[in-house]
Image (tube, rainbow, N blue to C red; front, side, top):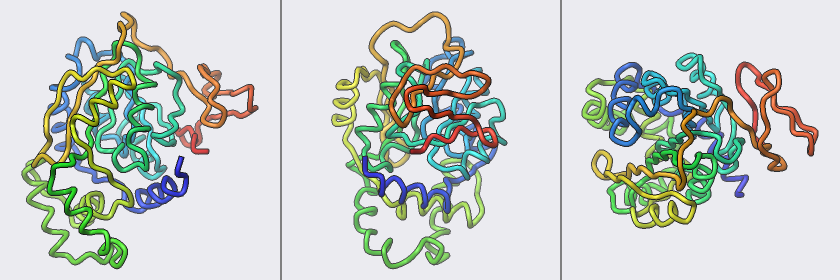
Length: 294
């Protein structure tokens, strides 16, 4: 795993966490994901992994529908805010490329706008597939090769090196407002717009993929494609996969752990902590967050 690249990405998003859109953004994603996730009666009570959850507004939407979200993010800053938005969620600080969850830990798994900004999108998909139970739904949002954003991101490379995001001119930042207005039906502040611009053009790593490539990878990892839709302005794919096998009639009851150091699994929580006997490591929450970066 390219540890230096993961560290670079973590540092960037600690400084510039993804945008917070409030009630409007929560409601928008809650409604939008109905097309991709199971109906409420098949979501209620189910354990849903949100990989790259950021501050947890998307998790809030699925919790509103009765699911039990488990939030993982690379940054502590986002997870701390996540806890305010989703006080009932279990939160993990870890990497999408080395998920601290046992095989089949979740009934369903989502990863919205995350895997393509990791150093290895294919590895991220394999990890999401691994932690999803047989018969479970996987929903992914990943950048599209055939989009204006792909061209812009590549052309922007020298500007990223010369101009830090905080020095980007105001007119450029304000140019993101129509996108937000059309997307959420509201306007956001200049600092939030700057973070949105940065997420698109200043993020240290971004890869772009075709539908065929993503569906081929999914099949390789036991995921059967069932639905595809291009996102706003076609800059990203929304994909639904079904994990091969039959879903259990009963929801997962607790989050089963996989040691991020040695891979030991499944590990059940004991008194709120996960103890890995082979490497004599104990993972317990600090300020409500399990620290799993190694």
